[in-house]
Length: 271
Image (cartoon, rainbow, N blue to C red; front, side, top):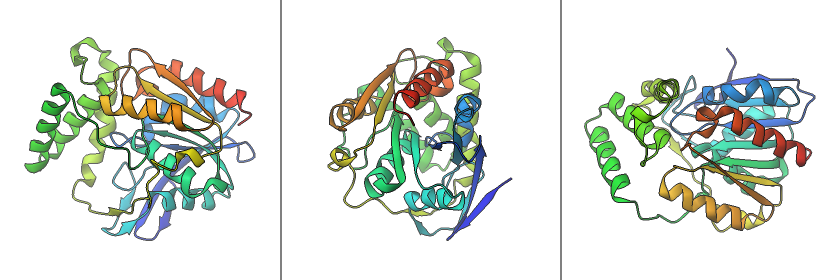
């Protein structure tokens, strides 16, 4: 299993496809790990060099309690693989990292796709009563250091959405959603410090001059839906897509729909 040693960490990564093809860097959500992209890998790798890695605090990556930059880690993986430019595909937290990287190092970014993500520095939005109550549960689990319950509550509110019931969803998707976050429990005691982009990306996305695809699940959190509207109207070369009947992980819940949209957009933009 390939690992890349960087200052204070050992990053687990995987590649698929031929290195001569256009590169894609996949960045996972904060309620998952690189396995979330499994449903799309074969299709993406047919015409691309697909790279993904577990960020610090997730999956099979290990880290010391040090200051670090997610952007620097991503660039280290690209450098290690000899990739000069890549199209970034990020979901949730991974989408925020992708936007930050596109702002900080535009020379390394050929295109940008985000799923259920907002830019760093996006203003706080008022939660609904349902969302507020669910986050109170999450806060109590964190205070009690009940990491397994915390992981389950996080997956439930994000992956299923605040307006849908678990029992109404596909049982296989429910099981996968829980398992994607459960494996991160082993990192609960790690305390690396992520260095933010300064200034944050919120006021700087207007400078991103590459093609961008902004997507979101219909039943995602209210703050994510607000961030979608902001990005799709602010990014200079943005197109938007709302995935129906899904929430925060549409590529896991509706893999065929997301795969079709991604491949069509990559083809249309010659990426």
